[in-house]
Image (cartoon, rainbow, N blue to C red; front, side, top):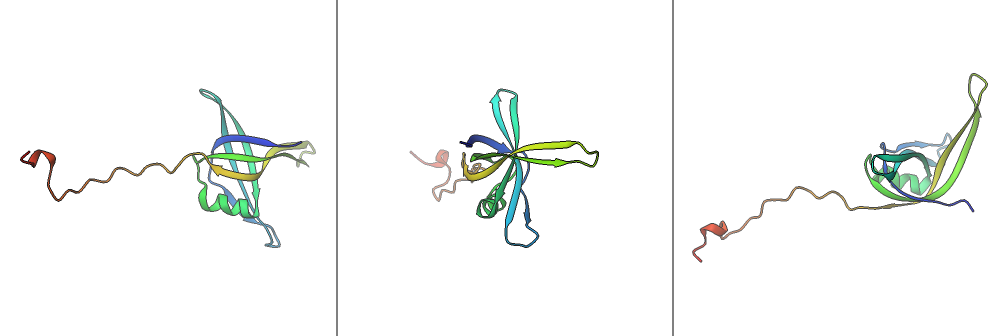
Length: 120
């Protein structure tokens, strides 16, 4: 079984690209997952197609999300001939973990005037 579940905040805005043939959309971003006060793990995340489009439309740096996915690895050889392995999360499902930050409170309009102005 390969299942990853976690809650974290985006460390940067998602980077969105299309595949060379234009058939798919891919989003890449990072998340920070708190372990304890002043300590976090950082993960790279990749999302495809509808999940990537969701990320592009709604996620920004600092957004707190719940993420369900799978751990994956990429292997390649760099220009110096060294084999490199990168671990990332392939996102299957993304959910918001908090509501939008409250807007500053608008002044309250009262046709009666201020409470101190009332005769009772």
